[in-house]
Length: 85
Image (cartoon, rainbow, N blue to C red; front, side):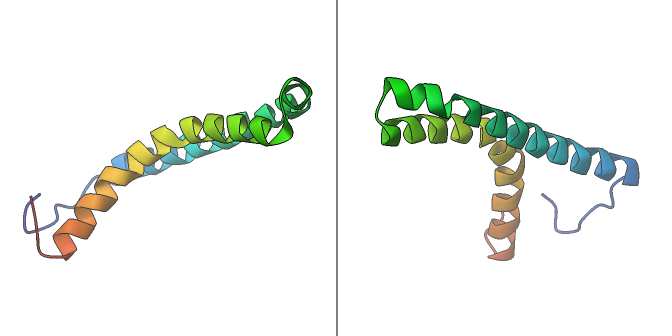
């Protein structure tokens, strides 16, 4: 990352923001659909185990969001603290 920010294309910025938004919406949608399986899971396992399994699924669903946002935010924080690269 250079010392000066290079202005990006507005179309590319819009595409990037929409792709992050689409990933979040998809993860939330699938997470909401996974609640349908709480009752069958609770019948097969204790309720805390069922919630733990669903929480693990939700974590896996949001890993792409963390991958999309985590590295750029980490780089920005590191640059602001004066430790580039």
